[in-house]
Length: 347
Ligand code: PHE
Image (cartoon, rainbow, N blue to C red; front, side):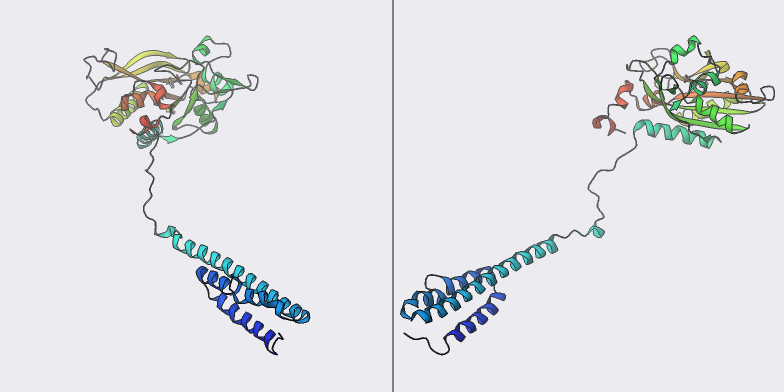
């Protein structure tokens, strides 16, 4: 058998047609193209099968042209398949695109301040409304600021009850109270001073239901001409009434001792749970211990080069955890630090 004059041209024409077809096919159509041309009875398969009917010379030509056509079509089919795959991904991405600008619902529940932070903020707000400004100091202090400038000499036994964690070969320490922050304020500023210093403090002591080696304080200081113990009583009474909204409850000042104040006192408030009759909260005493206070010791004023003949001042220190425990009726201080969500979610 001899090949006709247009045989090769026909193959090329077929290829051009099929390439066009492939370009518009979906996956299913591609499979039918494949079987139409390369399947058992496919057009190109048939041509290859019939090679034996031709002369050797023609076989070569036909074989070459048919295999070339096969290769072109195979590669076009693969290309189209890839394109279809990509188009599918693009389509999927379009469909699943997240338009954040239209999201107004935030599916996570809103957090809240930790009860200690909340209490601290509220105490600070109460004192701000009584005319106090707010200052902060470093948590790592020197012996001078934490003790000596507060009338606690280097080897004084009172340091035992405020033992702390020493750093840097005893060159610095974790502050045991925020009073050093007050010393820093006085160093920078002349009287009048009316400031509170909130912050975290540390003591070297074992934790139990009412003690923790890390806790929070808010200490207050006022220094001016003619500041008296009466001013101290007035301001603390105002604060307690404001903070606990308990105008009808009694407050008492009990003599105490602090190295940096003279005279010193501790302030108790009549138990708001039993109104003084005695209960579990006040350990049957009818009173709840609130804070320590006193008139600034002249030695403290001298340490910051204030004229202790001209100026007097009062100071007080409030334990934030203590107030939070009373406020939220929490009976173990350790609950505040365990970060158990079942506990924290209640506030
Ligand atoms: N700094 C004292 C303490 O931490 C509290 C205090 C402050 C007492 C000011 C009196 C006056 O124990």
